[in-house]
Length: 332
Image (tube, rainbow, N blue to C red; front, side, top):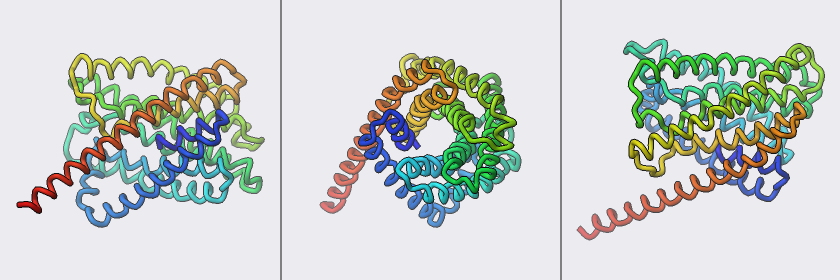
């Protein structure tokens, strides 16, 4: 997801070479992660079911839907439109299944209470997943005139569902922060997804505004255009809040700043915010937002590069440690 959106941002800036290079990394990573996920589902079924019943982890399953649609956007950008359509269909099936199973297993069907204590920023990935389908549907709409009516309905419907889900998740997370003690361990990188879910809602809204005439689009175009600006403003307001929480976590409370896979939860929102500014500025004729998006892209790109290097460094150190342990075992 992180690599994919940074690639899309580079494409919007006209940096086709950089976009294709990062896109290749995104596609390779996607294929590897799909393979590993399938292997885990077969080999470690009990562990997977435990995650599905855990409110603090279950909503992470929606990253599969969102990542599929980010890759779909990448394929569409390089002209593989049919591939994007296939991935949209696959993600739609996944979202419908997970959209009912995850809330039931992790929240409604859970005997232990209180569930609210286990809520965290990963719940907003539910929003990102459905909004990613709105983005792909709106992107495909001008490419498939015969399917314009259906794609417009999917785009507007997914965008609307995403807004309601975001409001619900915001209420749940706000209550969790107010009712239960706030510790630095709780404020982890996935909380950045709260901003990222707003940003992808802005992108979906901007694309809907630009769609050709269709009954569903014509009825909502003005509403979507206005709300997209409101959402962008709130996403902008959230960035200093999230930065301040990060400073409090690491500088004031001394949580070590060491690489963790959750770092990628920051990369995607930062890249998505940049893309949101560029898309919204173009759709609503707001050049200032376009300029902000283009400038902020380099913040997202820097976060992506730092996280990638940190991940590779962590992997190299782990491999060296395993090699030493294996060597000592052989000698013994």
